[in-house]
Image (cartoon, rainbow, N blue to C red; front, side, top):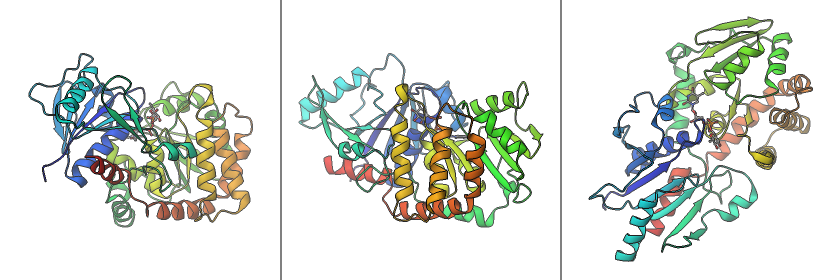
Length: 390
Ligand code: TRH
């Protein structure tokens, strides 16, 4: 069979989530499904921290089996370029009009259009399952696109998970010394509680750092460069913190980490006792780490992200594989809700209650991860879905 060609279009809105998902998906499609993948990205400079080998000055380059192209504002379909078999429009980023016209022309000429997918944001909300896979005809052009919703349920599009992820995680944890990671992660012990902290500016963060500093249990908090590190430095009275700075404040030892390439972020999550994550991709990676986690959602206008939080908590805490006693589930729900709210007064108490349940959360996270891994991963579901339409 002819090797299929897929085009993935990605616009960087802010942060790393859109390109994080697209880059991970593109690599997996090429490596595990033998597809020819072209990734079009409008902002290569924002992509580079996740993939330091990338040269943002090049309009076209090939890395890890993926052809990466700059998507300029004045995009025109490359001449002599046949249509891709599948086109992924990531997160409703709006395909270039020239590309849409070329797709429609193909349809008129051959009676067939490329499979056109709108890859949506991850959500556990019930309505997304109802919309997953639905067609949407273009209002003017003879084209149809299909909605593809990632999710946790078998009826959803699933979660990104490389075929070797769990094997590599277990091998790394069992055989490799912590020093083999570029960031030189601490061995366990010395820090009784090792926490990674990747979040947006958060009104609760200063009070939480104070709670850790004043607590009985030593906390070693690892903070990658970025927004959380800037806020943490200010909260601890420092003009700035840069890797490899390390700051001691009571029971808290806070260490600044470099922002590492995407593949090197996983071992950090595997190593820590609790992972604070955000957005979409780091959240999914923390779930696959099978360890306790705290999720800060990407804040949306009108608090539109809060139903998403609720839906995930309902799913996570009522999953059939749950082992959590009711008070532990309530403490988790309370802490996550506070972490996603503007209220910070009770965060110290909420943390104490949450931290007291960490052994339960560790068991639960491991069980949930094992159960979830029985489901087909997103890239495989996507390939299957598109092949049926081709
Ligand atoms: O960067 P984010 O906040 O992205 C957000 C969300 O995805 C949100 O849903 C979206 O609407 C918005 O962008 C535009 O969080 P996220 O999704 O976790 O992406 C971070 C990526 O960065 C992820 O792929 C992991 C990666 N990463 C590294 O590669 N190295 C690092 O050191 C760290 C801390 C993260």
